[in-house]
Length: 147
Figure 1 (cartoon, helix red, strand yellow):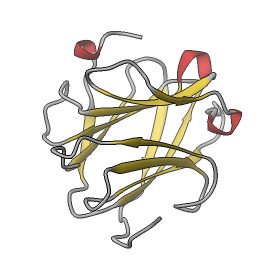
Figure 2 (tube, one colour):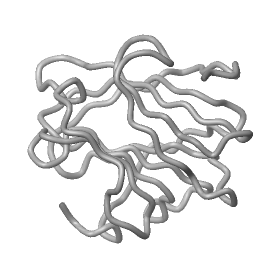
Figure 3 (cartoon, one colour):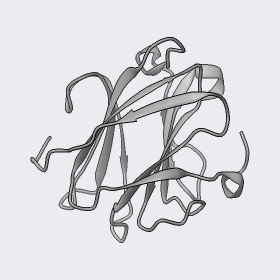
Figure 4 (cartoon, helix red, strand yellow):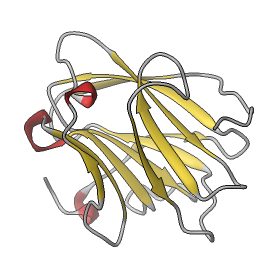
């Protein structure tokens, strides 16, 4: 996997007034989601890698550190022949960000991480530079308080 400075995220989506997003990913490994507070392609604040390490783990980290939140749970493994549903939730009231697998936001297997209190999630972007990976991003999101 290249160093962070080598990544170029594309397709920035403004999520500033939202608190959840559905994402469908198809690929053999390395679906990467970047969370940003501005639209500079190499300046992500948080990164979620789905199917890292040859599709053996999924994890989240801040830009400055190694992966501290990760799972080897096979529920998170990508599938090369079909799109698999994942979801992401966050709240300005809480510092927790939750990433899960499944068709319903708030249910299924999850990984959780805390964000820096000075970080406001304004943009979500996708990265597909490692291997062929396809994404479908939900067009609208709820603003409900999801726990």
